[in-house]
Image (cartoon, rainbow, N blue to C red; front, side, top):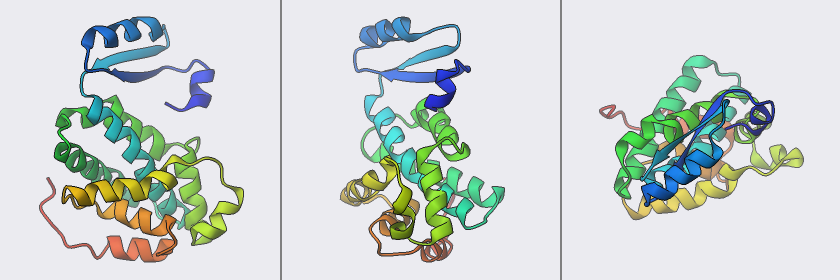
Length: 194
């Protein structure tokens, strides 16, 4: 959820995940309001993975926006990014359907689609500046910057290909600039979509 919209009590939803459904239901009952819907899940791993990776995908969407790319590019990155989330999660035992809910697609759409998202906004700064060093001059806390290298390492441990995450990790580590990252993504070998 985007905090600024929640503060205005705009309609929103979230997922509470616990291996103990009874605990999840108690939390659901505590935090559900007339404007904030809480849904339950027992897929703790899937919700955590989706929440971490969406920040990295939002950085890449922001970079594309900052470089002047439009909706087709953003749509491709979001949907291919969701595929990376799903493959990564499955390799770690997450429930694939979690990615279709609020913890997966919902969080991804909010983070990638809104200028209120710190990750997307910082990605835009990288896209405009070209490098993370230039963009970092006015940076706020951006989860995707810190998590991209760690997520990439975890993906490599289980042999999951994550080209978007890898490109973002290389940009935030200074190995690539934004243009090189996009060029590399567009040269990744084509495969069956799902």
